[in-house]
Image: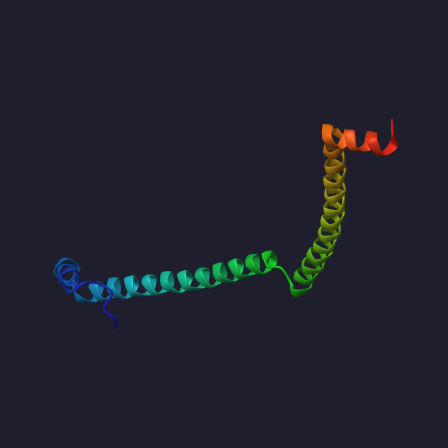
Amino acid sequence: MAVALKYEIFNSLVKEFGDSKAKLLNDFVGEVTNEIEERSKKSNIELKYEVRDDLLKELATKQELLQVRTEMELLRTELKSDNAKLNQKFNFMIILLIIALTLMNPIVAKIIQNLFKI
C-alpha cells in the first residue's frame, strides 16, 4: 500500500472510519493521484508534439533559403548596375557643370571672344 495521504490525515481517518475504510480511502486517493499524473504526462507529451509540429511548419526549408539567397544575389547585381549607371550620369553632370561655369566666367568669355574675334 502506497501512502497517498499524510500520516496525520490518515490517522484521523483511522480514528473516524476505522482501519479498513481509511486504507480504502488512502488507496483511492493514491490511484486518483496516479491517474492525474499519467494524464498530465500524456497531455504534456501531446502538447510538445503539437508545438513541435507548429514550429516545423513555420521553419524555412533549405530550398526556400536557397531561393531567397538567389533572389538576393539577383537584386545585388541589379543594384550594382544601377549604381554604375547613376555614377556615369553624375560624372556627366559634373562635366556639364564645369563647362557651364567656365563659359559663364567673364575672363573666359573674353578669351573666347578674342579667339573667335566676335
